[in-house]
Image 1 (cartoon, rainbow, N blue to C red):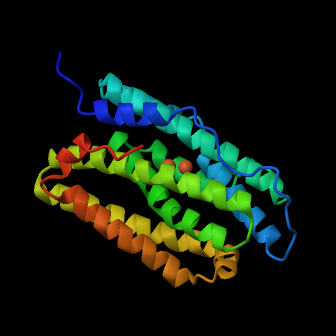
Image 2: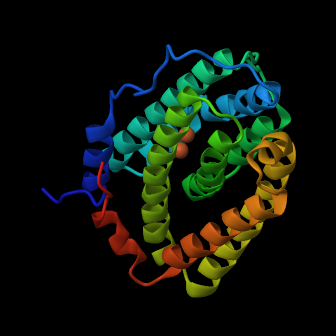
Length: 246
Ligand SMILES: [Fe+2]
Ligand SMILES: [Fe+2]
């Protein structure tokens, strides 16, 4: 039988599933200025990371590749795990569980309109921004659990970005050149606008971390540019065969 192009990604996610968070959960918490800002920021990302991924799983299943469908299920499970770890952080910092926030509702609404490609583009937007967010967040407050959770989530998110990049590279390779260029440009504009909103919404933790909003946005834009280049490059479809190390 012909092996799925996603077989390696399935093995990648399979190899990572069921891992615990290696963090000093019982380390004492030191209360200092900035605690509330971190709590408020974490609450919002917790909400963003949660969700059952039902729409994504349905769209993935429609692609008719069981390896991709299963890889997506394992990917969603990792995001749910992130929400749980952020819940741990939120309780540690004394935050409250959010039921809704406009930024999350906007993302969910956007993802409802369109097929799998659109869904992945919106997801990849959140992932790219997450790479900068989880790098910066531990700089905002000295805490060993915050450090460990962010380092771990960051590692997972790098895998997610590589996975979605590989999928989009393959999908975009089937599109006519001008349509591909238009899609990539639209996506880059969307990421830039979203990063601006996120930087504003989380400005308190950025200030605590000593990172300006402009620097945050710049880092996201830079990474997006490299990603867009990778997705459009002629060898992008071959990315599928190169799942990173677990
Ligand atoms: Fe995540
Ligand atoms: Fe992710």
